[in-house]
Length: 248
Image 1 (tube, rainbow, N blue to C red):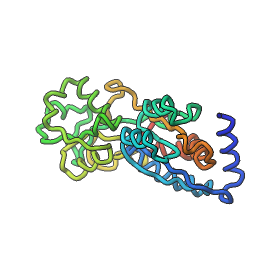
Image 2: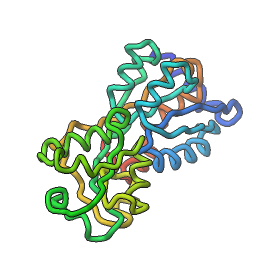
Image 3: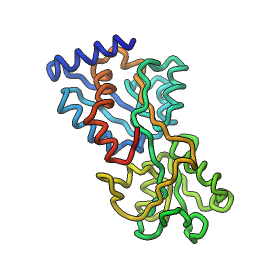
């Protein structure tokens, strides 16, 4: 299968736009901004068009297992792609970690969140936003952080829960929640926090957020799908990914 994927990639590169095709991609919500940039560059460089759908990884899993015709999944974790491989819904040899995510506690208000995250223990905020931990890996990581810090019981009555990390970010950016746990990629541009205030959560407070990509069964014979997975490993895509605060 690895040889087949390599052959498809080579075919896509050699023929370029002359044999351009579309690839349907399910993308974890935290990866929205970087993937939009990568997709534009991918189309310009290869002629293939990535048709992107953004949402919660857990919801994508349910859709894929019920027959949704996505060809590639860019998950917010490594367990969902592994489950899809185990379920016989994805190609085992195609799975790889395309990014390692960073969790931040963020407020749209400058100076509101301190650099050590002590606001979780001392703040008098009314609402704190988190993504649904059953659907969104960043939400699960947020609960692990609060459990580790021993603040879950005190803060739980103040939770505002988003279906995915994008909705969680909207709760905070709109002011409906004074602060919330979001992905660093949502608030970082060119290596800098764009606005507000944030605490970049130390990695030892939660399980690593390894984000894996995988080729789904409907994409097995797609040169565009194989080319996209190869493109994500390239220098151009990696520069974009790094600019949004991810590591590898």
